[in-house]
Amino acid sequence: GAVVAGAAGATASSAQGRSFEQYIEGRNEMDKGRGEALRFEFDARQPLGLDLSEVRFSDGDPRVVVKGIQPGTQADAMRAQGLKTGLLLVGVNGNMVDVMPPSSAIRAVVDEKRGAGRDGLPLTLTLARGTTLQRFDMEQRAMKK
Image (cartoon, rainbow, N blue to C red; front, side, top):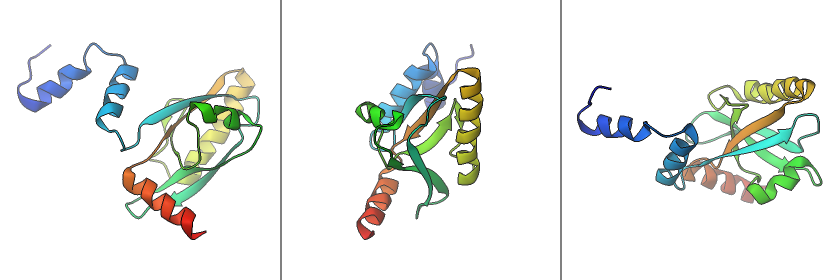
């Protein structure tokens, strides 16, 4: 490949020769506290046990957040892997949904779950902690209730 000078070259070369997962891990290390992404694989034929809700942050666009986890469900069993309330929905089966309006993102979860369940495939949700500011925002709201 062409040699690129300067900072851009360093970024481009650092992504070469690594898998997407390794790249994400590297990003997560750099972004500590800014919202690392976690992937959870569900059996699409079973209820997920997640309550998803729209939240509007003071720093921008509305997002979809895990508002609740129902006891005794798949989601409840995934708490040990880091699934918890307050995580933001960023991806559904590898498709980024955090740029969509919340209603479309939630519809994507429902549609993908239906399709995956019919085909006997898992449903993978990618969730992130959100920025420090977003987490602070959510904690403030939880205290007001």
